[in-house]
Image (tube, rainbow, N blue to C red; front, side, top):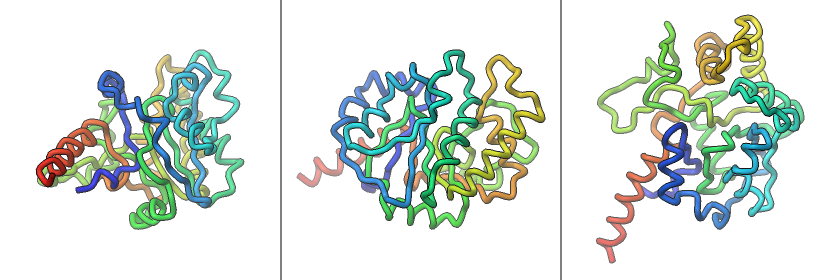
Length: 243
């Protein structure tokens, strides 16, 4: 299996510290990649996050546009649910048919986000495809938890649940979905909590929306750092044996 299959590597939570310790991001600004003119890329960050963002540095080094909503850049007392307002702000200005939404703190681009990348998304026959996860966060399970039907303990890749930090979708459907997320927050007074989770919001809405949701449960183009490292080890071993 070629490492070229992976276009986005996500290092959420404690994985981020491991990735930094391993020097995973050291070559970020040297990676050259292209973006389809049918695709826009959004990352919601405040100034503190932006200053440390490897993703932003990658886009700068490639002279590519990373859309960062202005309103969220000014927020100091951050809550992750503010991402949803930022996403909607960005989507309102986007004219491309497709949009890729990436966390700014813990994501690295490995390859071209080109027309072939969009073809892979279209192969899902979905409106939005999220990064898949092997578990749920927060840990409380929903009655109709998205991904449960795709759970298969016999599959080597088994990441059926939603991780909201990475997704690609049809721009109009992303607007519809994240508008539902904003409404869910309002109805449930969810922003009143000290540490609300946008992932909890996304998971709740995904169980009830008419927008067609899927997850990259087989890591077709999104993956996690530990999976990437596993395949990097296999790939390098195979290459050395061929030499």
